Length: 320
Ligand code: MTE
Image (cartoon, rainbow, N blue to C red; front, side, top):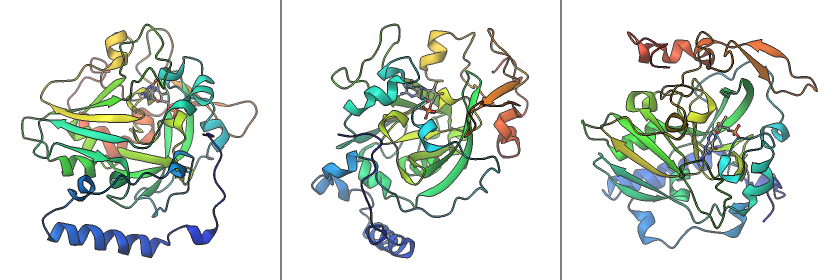
């Protein structure tokens, strides 16, 4: 399998937006009416075709949020400078090693305190809601940032489908950990885990992400599905998710578990709260330029209008 090699598509291969929406509405409208919404995929043969393992184009609708005005990071940079420790700790390792990961067939298990626990096939999930283009700022805790046009739909849609019980206060994400496909270096307690408070996860900015730059995610970006939480440091955005669990207790998360004084559970981008070993006031923007410029970091990564109210009354130095 080749990673990063898009197959040649003719424009006629791409489902026009109206047709995509009509087909989707027909399928989901009809199924909902029959009272069997979302059960169908269990009875059908897997939708697997080998070609979906390579990057392929996705039909999208315009994003709900206006794109950020900063220049977009070139795709080649966003897909070759990655953190995906399952494939090694160097930024070049994910691109070099993630080709071994099989992204079909793939399922996500929804479990815990919810009324609709299920194992969902990735291709059903992909078609569940229209895919939006969402160009976001993405800020890593290591003080570099990118502007990436992601493709997905609100995480809230999946949460509504799962229908959490009133006791559920948090949602935990678990990534794939499979030694036959991954390096899984020592020093980490695999699988990679992350978590959000349910109201954070329901915020319209939180994106269940299947693609970027109009294509399916490349493996090193967390194919076939990851979350993107743009107002938080990048490590909150778990890649290659296989399980979503609803819980009444704050879940243990990989980086918080490794060094709770360095990586808080909340990890909202906060230029006023330094990492114990470096300042978070500035970031190195990875864009088309040969020499990345250093720019000031914005509170909540520039999304304060959308998310600051989630943290009203909280001491953000204590809950960092
Ligand atoms: N998810 C998993 N499963 N494993 C990881 O190592 N790294 C995190 C996050 N999600 C990571 C992960 C970190 S530290 C960052 S900065 C982002 O993914 C990087 O996303 P990108 O490679 O698409 O830029």
